[in-house]
Length: 309
Picture (cartoon, one colour):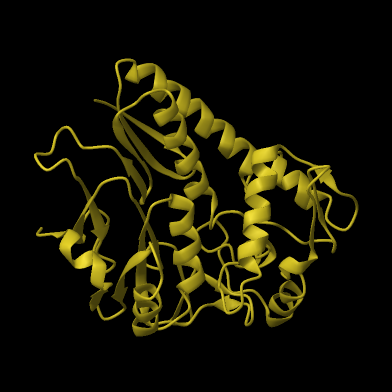
């Protein structure tokens, strides 16, 4: 078992793999993550994703198969009714800048203008030519709600294909495990769920997992305060403002990390009780909600996998 920790994508990434040539696998994975960041970033003006945004309203852009695939998945999931997930949300993210230098409450006129640019129906995809075209000028695709889950799934696929028997990848709170943990008597991996009321590293609970992903969406780290009112970075495209909710964090447990990203973003705007009801009736996806008042709710099937702190 070998571990590698790197600083990338604005976070700390930890990878662990059990393989006779673990060092080489981890080195290759690091290079793959660097490549992903360079091509999929909405913050790098030279990325492949930003070339699509630069050509908004002008011309289609041919992209690599993996980037096309994630945009296609993102558009499909963005069109689901009553969902907060929207990969066309880029103009709003750039206007508010929450979590980045220059964060601000934009003027109402700017918010209204952005709302006219964030309809995912205006993302044109050509499957045969692998082109992406944004119909309106100043539209911007932002894959931040999906990318880490997609990356985690692809990296673990490579680990398995190369014969690794176990391991995990943690992309700053987005965790995907596979195989049996050789350092644990029961073979399960322990993953902590951040307490949103306390500094990072303080857990509200710990989950025991194997061959599962944990993805958490929360409003407790990237915030903006203006005139005594606090705003976070998860937006409601209908209003142009951060979503109003009693939820401080939502954690999704699923088989694939991308599933967790989709679920955690799609459901975030709902009330805590409704999220738990929805997840209890959804196959193969479970969840944990922590409210703004530090109340904790867990879907029925997860209770057996909670470890004592």
